[in-house]
Image (cartoon, rainbow, N blue to C red; front, side, top):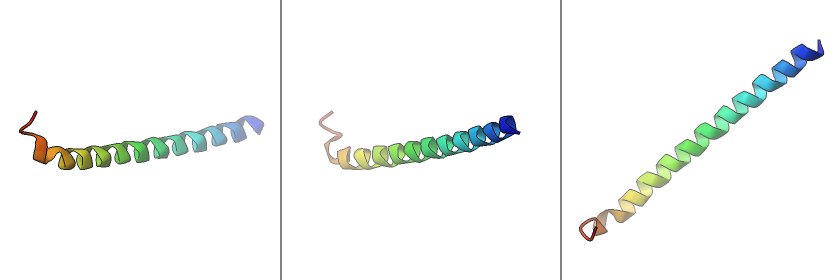
Length: 46
C-alpha cells in the first residue's frame, strides 16, 4: 500500500515538474519574441 502511495506522489510531482518547465519555456519564448521586437530598429547596426 505504501509503495503504491509513493508512486502516486511521484507521478503527481513529475506532472507538476512538467507543468513548471512548460510554463518556463513558454515565458522564455515570449521574452525572446519581445526582445527581438525591441531590437528590430537597431538590426541595421549589427
